[in-house]
Length: 313
Image (cartoon, rainbow, N blue to C red; front, side, top):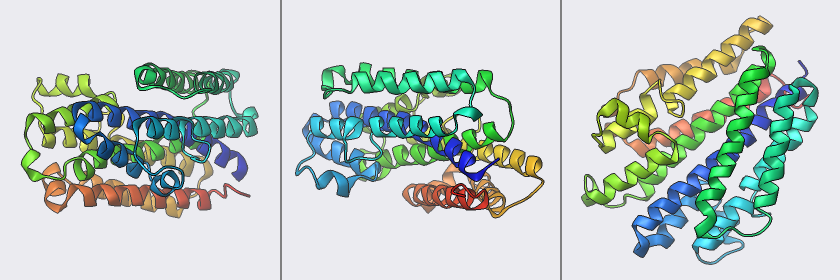
């Protein structure tokens, strides 16, 4: 496969996942702001910081007003990671690699973009935010369903899934970091009703509330939820699950091309470090520090994949 085609597939699905996860991050911030109305500006500031868009946001706005943050993350023209810009980039990459995609995947991607363009043609109010975010998540799920239901399990599929899981791992780590590092500045809140409500919100933001309670009988604790979202290999948005899927798809590429590259070694190192940890050792070493390293590792791994498979040649 040409490196340009591999790169187009990789980034198409990174952008699709980014759009969905920006929507999830926005919903998490919105729900937490509702529970702490007196400190709402701080919650919106934390969402912008976690999205890595503080400088870009402050270049346009002086305060962290809810309406401004929502508009910036959903449809801000100057924000390359806004939902609308991410879906536009996904569609652009899909057009570039259209011959590598099934007609169902292309049509689902195109329809996802068209609906997003329509519903985001004007600012979204807080009243309509939940329904808007639900539509975005649904359309993203349709694209994934088309991919799984119609595509061969070959190198095309592997590059698409690598983009998905690298982006997903990054975003799960960022959403967790919002909760622990930014939204819980005081140790006195740990274990309180406010703290537990925020952890429940994080579970809802990654569609994990029901599955967590299935496994834990309704017992909620920060340690248990962090363990679930970091180390549980059954949870499709956990860091461990993403790590496993990245390793699996890289292994398929290694077998298909009969060539082992630097990105394979780094993937193995990340997995070994992840699976050699317990939630207790992670908390002892600092959850924020662990999550920061996870984010940095995924960024470095993505760069290695791009270089090893010559995405821009």
